[in-house]
Image (cartoon, rainbow, N blue to C red; front, side):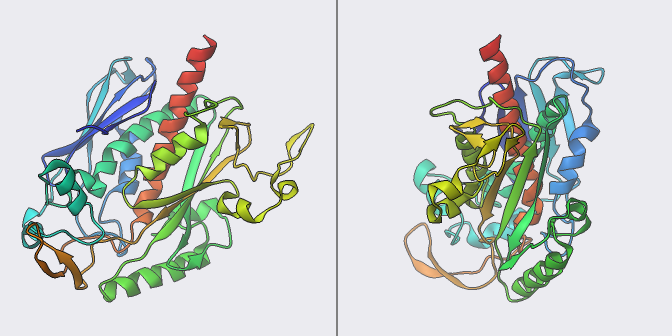
Length: 351
């Protein structure tokens, strides 16, 4: 399928469907000699996998990664790396009632119009399980970035109308919604459970911070660093918004308020989010990603079938009442892939 690849020098191609045999990724452009084993990848896959808590899908999958190529005796060889996760707990029968319907909020209608055929079992390629390949590739990218001292952390910033007022990095993995504020986390969990109990779902905002990126990454015109980050984030299913630095608030600022002044120690503010003219300035890269509510809800909604008959649809099965808790490692992964790609591009430029 066209559009399943991302990146230039560090390039990934994901494959597989939600209810197919397996999901995975092929990574090209990995530096040879990088120490890598399955556990390096499994850590992030475990953060993404289903069945983690009451606010995620009850589908149980081990999501165990298998390294099929590109690694020998614990080190990357410089040849393409193939990572595969086999689907073990799919229940395709859950979708038999909607196989001829277009579920509201899903890609059913657009896939049918584009290809003339679609895999109705869990959405096929439009399923959230496609992100397994992204997270696996992102774990490899993180290994490369660690050599440069680059660190990436994402967390839930806002959800169901609740905004995190505190930023405590130690709390992110200590609550089931991966919020950076423990008090806000409790309220968010209550909102998600309330939505689930009323056959509804909620959306949220994931914020990401990247530290250690040197000044000079990114291209000045079409391949700006923030443009590539935007494409990476907007390519994640359910993402409907992206902003960097002060984001949409810049429309309310004056030039004097928005400009990041400098002294001999660096930038005094970070409204730019660490990127100027599409190129990193050495400051912390900061951006936010908005996730829509999960479209799979058991409430009755109006829709049509493949023959344009009007009817009502209820989507039953094992679905997340909120996407963002499991999307946090996906955001980190895509950020890592973009930064790794631009590091390799900059190295090629200066070679």
